[in-house]
Structures are given as structure tokens and as C-alpha cells.
Image 1 (cartoon, rainbow, N blue to C red):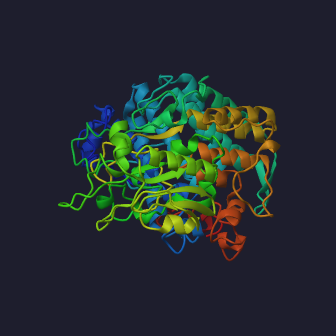
Image 2: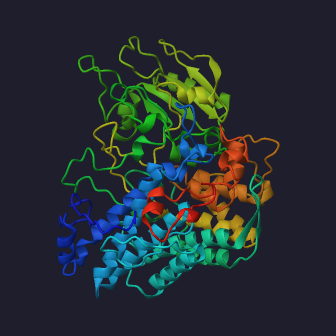
Length: 611
């Protein structure tokens, strides 16, 4: 079987973080001899695999409404719904998450009387099955450690998968020795409650609602038991924590492990004994447009040339006063005067990273390359600010010699389909403004108004590659507020749903709403798109959880995948584009062909609809 083969390698994982210290056991047989006496050495291998689901992008954020690839003819196979069962990314995802589950089963198997280790393994196993079911629906629900090559694991019915996961969570929360909270990437009862809330919410949608019309996104709620359970679990995960921490502070690079963090994939640069240039992650260099020669400009380098850039809708999601825009995107970019000898910028204290690594006085002496204003900013407000920066000597001006690729300075307001842009002259005087299409703006080299800061690592020593050692949150408190809001809405309680939504909006500085009908979306839609209460929930999730790899799950779960692609995709114009020749809609990803070929308990008849 593709995902549960017996190969179990531990090499190369020593010292990955404070609690990830593993002995190098590259031979599976030696490992099985060693583990019974040292089950704690399995633990880091289990947690290490969490990093895969925490940083995987294509299958978690694409095929939705928030991300585009401005430098390509399309937005990729996932967004175009042209993925096939032979797709290598699908195969790798399925395989890696199944490996994580088998490693968790290994930890449980060898934990013996160590109830703490067994409980941690059970939590990671539940986490893995949640990620698998949201991508593939029913999967083989295997709870035994597979030590030999076995190839007969039937798909477990989805309702059994959900029941098993929730029963596991119930027992872990009530009977395990897990700590109530942990902000160091270790399983806790708060983390159990958080994943249980997401599982119950998904179960309610998948098992107790019926699709009426895919294009319209309409559905019928047949039972509310899972939604009520999701509320209960979300409240347990929230633990009475109020959203008082400023949004930008919650995501600040030097505020890891704060009160709102529930469970994160851990990274530790100082404790890593190997090549620090290649063993972090690359999220810092994703979720952005293209920057030209990053070594010369001093700006961040982007992976894939801007594959996961902010869409027109996402760029205009943020209302007046909503601090989540400036807490999510970089709005001040400093320029980097080129060293004439090296023809490069001074990485770390010039260009992008000067925002973090320079004092206000040092920043004042750096020329500003880009100033990006929140989408609700008026032209008059922007021009007044620009004039003040000129008066203060923070001049946005063009370098006299731009031979080496210094960023041409500009200021801009991104408002969905268009961008109001001020391009500065060499004398630094107030320029005239112009309006450019949004897609042209983000396609141009060195333009980047959509650069996500949630994963910025100011200690990074280079502009590209896996140099990011920020921890990556997977579960956090404000998302639990939105899980409760969604569950209350589906349970028929709009008043309590709105209460949780307003708590999130109040912290962000957005106006509190008296009713769902009072919400006015800040982006443009067609006449065919009629707003319903669920759209407010999805908009709040987009603002609060932007670039957190939840969007595909959100749209699939809520049965809005077709409706949102028809409305907001640049390429999907009809339902047939998301279906196979038989008219089956591709709600899930395909089961990998390798799994069908090698697993004797699964045949082509078990393939997900649409493939």
C-alpha cells in the first residue's frame, strides 16, 4: 500500500527543535529492536511529519477565490480542476500524511505504559485523518502500526472515520494525561478540543447536509447534532480567552507561543545541527508576487514566481479600519542602495528586512521603495500621507542610476480590479497618479503589494530557499471563534453566531454588525451572486486566516466550491470545467493511482467522483 509501507527512517532528524532529539536509526529492523526500550525516540519523528501538513500549499489553498498566479497562463492544475490520479503532488500528499499516521501508530504501539506518549501519538493520528478526509473523503482508517509490507486496506466509510476521530478526541480530552495547554508544539487537551471542533463541523456538513444546487451553493440542513457538538468543542478550545491581543502582535515574529496559539509545527534554527540554509521552510517566500533579482533589490525572493499571489477579491476584502490588512501584508518596503562593488543589496538591514532589523531612526534614513495603503484608503488620504513623508525627508524617489535593479519607488492603493498608483520621479516631488489593472500591477517585476508577513523570519540569512525558522500555527484561538460562529449558524442560532463573529471583528477594528443583513462586502460581485449569511463567515475566515492553508477545506466543506469558483475564478466559467465527462463534480481530490494499483482492497470503482 502506498501510504503504509514498512519503511520507517529516522536519519537526519537529530536536534530539529527543543523536543525533537532523535537517535539516527536508518535501518528499520534496528529501529524495531531499539524502540521497545526507548519509545521516546519515536516522538520527534512523529512531530517532524506535522511540518509537512503545516507548510503544504497547493492542495490546501488553491482551487479557491483568494490566490492566483499572475505570471502564468492559468492558476495551476488544482485551480483549473485538471488534476488526475497520476498527479505527483496528490500522491506525495496522500503518502506523507499516511506516513505520519503510521508513525503515530508506531509511537502508540511502543509507548507501553507511557500514557503521555501514547496520547500524543493518538492526537497526531487524529490530526492526520482530519487532513486526509478533507482532501479525499473516506480513507483506510488504520490504527495498528504497520511494520511489514501490507497491501489490503479498504476505504472506511466517511461516517465511521468521523465517528472514530471524535471518539478518540473525547477519550483524549477526558481521560488522557495531556496538559491542558501547550505553546511549544506538543499535543494538549486544548489542541484536542480544537481539532475535534473542526472535525465535528466537517462531519455536520458532510453527513447532515444535502446539496441542492452546486452552482448556487444551496443546501439543506437535515440534522444539527454535529454542529452543536462543534460549538461545544470550540468553546472548550477557546477556554474563555478573549481576543484582546492586537492582530499584528498575534502574528509578530518575536511573539511565538503566545496565548492564542494552540498547536504549531515547530522550528528551531539555533538548535539545528545541520545545514541551516536548507532545513527550515519556505513560507516566508510564498504568498507574494515577483520581485526581480532579489539579491540585488534586497527584497524577499519568491518561490515559483508568484504562484500564490493575492487575488483581486482578496486584495479588497479588508474594510475601513480593519487592522488585519496591515497585520497580514507588508505595507512599507525600504529600498536598498546597491553596493557598487558587489552590485548587491545588504541583506537583513536594507530592503524588505529593514522593517524588522533597523531602528526607527535607521529606517528614516532609508529611501522608501513601496508604500501600500489598505484598500479602503481614499486618494485624498494617501496623497496627504505621501506629502507628509516628503516633508519629513522620507522621500520616495528614483535613484539616479538604476543599473543594478533597485526597486522603482511607488505608492499604491489596491482596490480589487484596479490599483491607484503614484510613480515617483528622480527629484522626489509629488507625482501624478494613474490607474492600472490589478493583474498588470502584480505581474510587473518588483511590484508587490501582496507580500504576506505572517511567516517572516528577520534572522534569515538569505532571500530564497528553506531559510525560514518561524513556527507555523495550525490551530489557534480566533479560528475557534469562527468555527463556533459557523456551527451556530448551521444549528439555526444566528444571534450567537453573530456574537462570535463580532468578537473577531472588534479585535480587528472592523465595525460590529447588528445583523447578518447589515454586512456589505467590500468587493465587487456579479448580479448573479446573492449574499447569504454563510458568505460573511467565509469572508471573516478569509480575513482572519489568510495564507493559513485552510481555504480549500472551507469551500469544499461548506459546499461553496463550485459557486465561488464560478464567481471569482479567472478561468472557471461553468460547472463542466469542474466535472468529468459524466458530469460528476470534483469535490474531492482523486485517490492516487498508485494507491489503487497497489492496495488490493481498493479498485478503480472506489475512485472519487469526477475522476
